Each structure stands twice: as C-alpha cells, then as structure tokens.
Amino acid sequence: MAAPQIPNLNTLKRGSGRPFGRGHGAPSSTSEEDYAAKDKIVQQTDQDASVSRLSAVELGYLDDPFAKLFVSGNGNQRRFPIINRGTYVRTTAIDNLVHRFLSSPSSSAPRKQIISFGAGSDTRFFRLRTRTPPFPAFTYHELDFASNTAQKIATIARSPALRALIINDNGEEKYTTSEDLTALSSPHYNIIPFDLRTLSSTTATDDDATTTTTTTIPPTLPPVAAALARIDPSLPTLLLSECCLVYLSPPHADATVRHFTHTLFPPSTPLGLILYEPINPSTAFGKVMVANLAARGIVLQTLRKYGSEEAQAERLRG
Image (tube, rainbow, N blue to C red):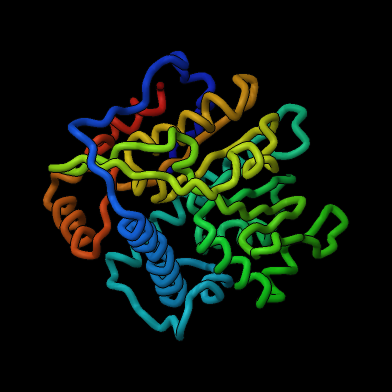
C-alpha cells in the first residue's frame, strides 16, 4: 500500500511558470447563500468520517482511543463491512507514511513538521503523541474552516485526556486560543482557521460536467501571511491532504499545491506530500460513488481533471 518513500517535491519541480489549471466557458455568479450552503455540506463530511472511524475502532479494525471523543450523539452507528475495511486501509496507509517521515533521519533540523489540510476532527496528532517509543520532535499544524476548528477546540477543552497531550518542551500542559475560540497555538500543535481558497485569486472557476460557476471568496478572512505565521519554512515538512483538495475547484486546489510547494518553502527545504483522494470516476464503482455523493449535494470538484494515477502524478511535477 505505502510507497517506498515520500519523494521530496522540491526535486520534482520543472519550473515555476507553468499554470495550474484553467477554467472553461462563460462564468456565472452564485449567491452568498449558495456559497455558504455548499461549504456547509463539505464541512459536514467531517462528521461522516468521524463516525466511520469510530465504527472501525469499535469493530477492532483500528486502535484509536480518541475517536469516540469527536463523535456527537451516542456514536453507535455501525458502518457496512466495505466501509470499515476502507477506513482501515485509508488510515493505516497514511499512518505508515507519516510514521516513515517522522522516523527517517534528518540532517541538522531540530524538528520536523506536518501540515494537515482540512484536518477536521482527525485524531492523528493525538495518536502520534501517545506512540511508544515516541517519535523525534515534531510540530503538527491543522488547517480547516473556522466552524470546524471551533468544534475541535471545544472538544479539546472538554477533554483532560486531549489537553494533557498538548504540552511544551518541559512536559507542561500549555496552549492558547484566540478570542473567538477558532484558533489554538502551542509549541507542538496548532489549529489554524484557514480557507485554502484564499491562496488563489479572489475568484476561481468551478467545473462540473455541464456548467462553469465563479465563486467569490469572503473578504473578511485574515491575510495569508498572518494565518500561516506559525509554519516554519526551514523545517523538513510533510503536507497531508486526506480527501481535502478534491472538494476545491481545480484552480483553487492547484493554487494550494503551488503555494506550499513553490511559494512558502524554499528549494532547500525537504518537502513531501501525501495526497489521498478518489480516482477512476468512469468505472462502475466510481460512477456509483459519484452518484451517491451527488444525491447529497457533494461534488468532488477535481475528480474529472485528476481522475487517474497518471494525472495525479503529473499535477505534482508542475
């Protein structure tokens, strides 16, 4: 399942002048209500993933003592076997790559860092912190919508077990939160409310099979530099997108990859990317998956453009 190693993206770049994706057709605007409604549908997929993770844990597929803390209600929702197996494969494959990154020797860097896009209620940081033997020093950054980060911070505040893992170098529980409780900062763990679409221009084109729609980014979001200030561009870094970029329009997804591989980090920084998202939409399984998601109002926006392994590999060589 896992690749032999995570390649350094800075050794794959072919130049910074190549454009990342294009829109087609005449744009039409959407209302702010439609924009917010579509965002909410995507945000709610996080709870779906949490329930699937808890189902896999309760049936013995995964060992995750923190999964139940992030599921609202009684959480007693068993998934079908194919979902439990898929959750196991997905989680284990990504864990293996993350563990390999953290365990691999680094030169003189004092620590490594992981940046997780659309982390939501993911428990990976807490599982990494309880690993025996412990990993070498690392910092974990999570980026997501403010509504999702607020929910996660509220869960942490209610749980002594989670708070006890957010410690400083002296082993003391220590973190701060923003006044609106959407951001959390600590020496080793940061939750950042951030809309990845702000990394592109103020408008971008969303492609589906028949139409092209221009979406506008809300003007009230914080500047990119301020939001990402806690990320150290000199540290060996692993970028993690676990079913996140696929929900963005191709121009927004490409701008996110471009910013983190071409702009934020210099060529001297070792940089890797784990990208987990669906492919092969034209197969029988793919067609059923796309139809089921569409019935819930969910569109995998980059699936058509990056629907094969070859297309996924090509996007990272830009």
